[in-house]
Each structure stands twice: as structure tokens, then as C-alpha cells.
Image 1 (tube, rainbow over the protein chains, first blue to last red):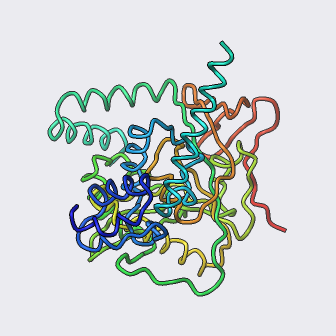
Image 2 (cartoon, helix red, strand yellow):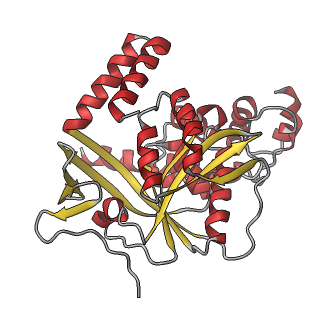
Length: 105
Length: 239
């Protein structure tokens, strides 16, 4: 993990957290330190069919979101930036629907 | 080996390797499937590239033939799936086609497909209102051995399949994936497949099928009869 620190300092906080997870759980071997916010995680073989399950489980448990069937597309998981944007969007959706529910009571 | 013997063999292997709990779960699943089965799948589609396809790096593809059956039987036995072998033998005898993936000479998986000339598409696609055109194929059974999943191998196998089908002149491929199977959904989505529709089915006593609220009766191996209408066997849409 320590080898990745210099790269992760250029990332936004949420991106950095996702980066740390990816580096510790999904990346095997060397080269992890060079993942940038816009690097294609699919092309690099980091988010493959097995890795995506771990990533979904992590996002759901860590950020309290639910990754629906329709969300499982490259547009949401292709880069760290897209993944972080997706998580933020889902969190915003969850909190706004929570507010609506509370208002309806 | 017939299906009953193959199933018994799978059961004994499961019992030996994973214990009585796994064997009991296997029996329960088989018994329950005779009564009721529920699936929630996504129909997928991709336009196949018409240009020169890229060669796969480490996965080699071979068209399945009768001479592969002993190898497939051994492969299926290792996966506790010996009951598939008789189906493969029947499928090949009926002219259905499969592509086998090899890595370093070892069989890693297979992919079954058919085009509009085979009546079997009546079984899979008719209830969903889809008819294959002449240059379309339907892929219906992709399996990669668990030890070869990850590291891009399944994606490379799929790319190889597409290249092969493209060379055969097909321009579009349809397939199914279980909506809750995240790794498989990701494999197709990251390979460029788009969702066409959701396909929720209920099957009662193996013969009665409910698809999105409409009833179908399964007649024989390939036929489908709408519960309100004529026998429908989805003839190929030839000009």
C-alpha cells in the first residue's frame, strides 16, 4: 500500500478511498502506483468480472448505496473518477429519497 | 452415459468432495426444479464488428466436434457437471454448434450458439418476441472453469468467439444473463453488450412457462405453444 501513496495524493478524498481499496484488494503485482483518476480500469484488467463483485460489495457496504442491475455498466466503473461520481450520485439519490420519505410521514 | 447416471455421478463426487450438505442441496435443487423454477434474466445484444477481428492473445478457439466429447466429458466431470455431457452429445448430433476455449493446451470453457436455421430458437427467444435474422446468432451457454475466471481470460474468450462469428458472416449476437450474476453481467457489459429487455420467467412442472405474465406450453424438445393460440416453432426468417 505504501508504494501507492504518492499517486493517491492527487486524488479527491472519495477517489483516494476507492483507490486504496482497489490497490489493496484488486491489483496484484506491480504497477498499482500508476493508477490515475482517468485511467481505464477495465483495459488494465483491474476491474474484471471477478473484481467487479468485490468492488460492488465494497461500495454497498462502505457507502450505503445499492448498485442496481442497470448500474452495472462501464460508464460507472471504468475509471476512478467515474466510480467516485457514481457513488456520490447514488448517495445523493439515497439521501433525497430518504428526505422525501421522512416528509411523507 | 445417460443423464440419470451422469447426475448420480455428480452427486457422488459432490458427496465425496464437499460432504453430505452439498449433496443434499444438490438433490433438493434437482427435485425443486421439477416442480418450479424462476429466472430473472437480461436479454443482451451486440453488433459484431465487420472489420478484421483482433486475434486473441492466450486463448485458442476450436469448433466443437464429436471427437471432443471425451475431453468435454472429463472437463464436465471435474466441474461436477457430468450431466451436461449427454446434452452436449445430443446437441452436436443435432447440428448445434459450440466453440471451445483452450489455454496452454488445456480446455478452459465453452460457448454454445445457434443461428436462425435451427428451430431451437423457438425455445429460447420466441416468448420474448425476438426472431433471429439470417445474420444474427444467439449464444446460450457460456461456461469458463472457475480456475480460469478473472485476469481478463473470460473477456478474451468472448472476444475470440465474436471474432469467429464475425468471420462466419454474423453481424449481431443475442444472449442471456441472470440479472443477479454480477460477474457475468459485468463480463457482457464490459465487452460492449447492451441490455435489450428483462426476461422474467416462471416454469411450473417443467412444461408450463410464464413469461412476463404470458403463458406458454413446452411441447417436446423445441416447440412452444402459446396457451392461447397455435403451435409456435419460430421458423427461421428467410426471405
